[in-house]
Image (cartoon, rainbow, N blue to C red; front, side, top):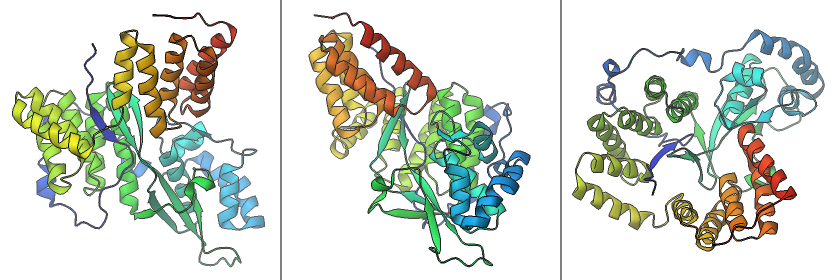
Length: 385
């Protein structure tokens, strides 16, 4: 049976913004540049909000026209997010900086926040960033489990501009009904930049580019040492690079500051086990089970094992449990559809494949599920035990 590596990397979750930053000599001691070759790509915070010539041209054209008729806040929003103009597409496959998101006309929520902020800053509009407390969501890439947070931004009016509209306007990429009564946490721009750098580190790591991942994670930490996800990512990079002692130090650094951080705790337990410290690893896992009796993807892993054993009934039950706590995660619906196919229930298989298609977050996943759904509609062999 496949041995799952539980590595949880937070994509956009912030650490305590009110805590004093760690002493430089302490966290910088966790860096070991000598173990890695120079990065193969530019890693520079100056690129995050940089405006391209194409963006400036758009600003002088469609954006300026809409601002004249609707004011800066509503004019900018319509210029960027009216489907008839820029035709932006949500795409979780890659975190892009402002100019990359504009050129691709696509991005995840962090990329779209960054691109919107770049335009607003160019226009002289005050920008405020917020972490939105939504139910925790998870994704998977190979053997990596990714904790996904959510951010949005609010735009203020320009100083010289009078408008009868609201003083600030919040722009979010969740449906308005999903935002009611949600708590938010104001973020510094340095934290947004750290989130961007950490996302890039995670994406490089899951693509097997451990060397470049190190430099992105390092820069994330330098941009905001209070953003502890950067240290967690650094620890995973060291683990993948077979520097287990350094990985342990990075995870312990997080746990010194957040003793209940289950992501760092899970990663540390894996490292301790690899280092032959079985007793300490077992103690950590017992603590994790008490804190998190049904961890993310726990039912999913049991469902996969059941599928491998041909037990489609148990697999269906396990995947259904994951759907019950993550109603819109496409991969859970995909596997639930496969379990139903194994049971010969084509009607429910089609239903869940359709949900997987509708909720896929990358073009690759969308096309994969759509193709399978099309084949299922045409013909489905009944698989029986």
